[in-house]
Length: 319
Ligand code: KG4
Ligand code: ZN
Image (tube, rainbow, N blue to C red; front, side):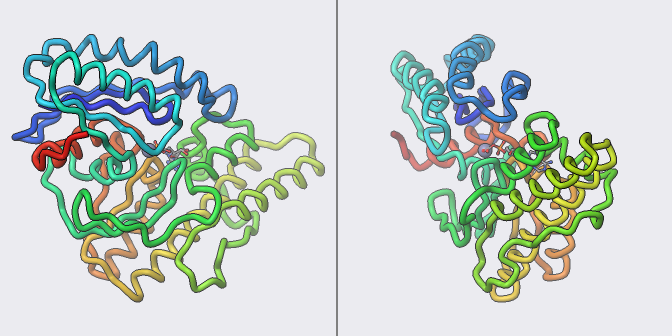
């Protein structure tokens, strides 16, 4: 079995995965959403201190599996350095004391492997990664052959949801709450610009859209002082519609020149149902197979890290 640790941002998570059967034997994640919510975003110092407390609480539950462990895997990049450090210190200590190899895992490749939890891998695959820190299109031929073919010029898809939620005094993380508000709202009430609409380049940008929605909110506040529930729902719906339309336009552009056989959406924001439905329709039109992670494995978790670590273990790719 492999014990894997994820602590790159604000989730403390540990998993135990069986190398031979790919079975997920143990998985726990303790999220710090409530603690960061009052600040409207992740406070790195607080995140790091909370990992110090929660990671050992989870680890203690895994003690019975220690004699069966063959390796320790840990997310080592990218992420908040002082959060990553907590998981890495624990992983190094376990590797040294149990005398088993250490496997370093890239968080973004980990997200790709959320598709393959308890399943065989499928490659080649083209992947849209939408998280709090990244918005990318990746071409992957195997776990170690990945190429970024498009990325954001500024902010990311998930982060823009977090900022809109903050502007509207909604909770953190913003994605799920903005999606809920959007469901009840009128997406045509506020007209917002689709980013990079005229550009032939396949790239993403969210800073302009964030600014445009901020101006709409400020104007509305000047007019009526306090925003109603309906105002907030309409703002969320209008914003979400354009944020997704932007992704869709760029993915459509990609499909026109290079239609992949397998396409996937991964990362925390891939839990967004409207995004899933729109990409599903596009894939259907192009006869492309769409692969999606289970909703519970979209956001950061150690199960995806453990699943990827099996590939490293089988190739004796140790740190
Ligand atoms: O992958 P993840 O858990 O952490 C990072 O690696 O960044 O992604 C978290 C991001 C947050 O920005 C969150 O607001 C966004 O994913 N997110 C969503 C949804 N659920 C989470 N964005 C849009 N719609 C959602 N339903
Ligand atoms: Zn992530």
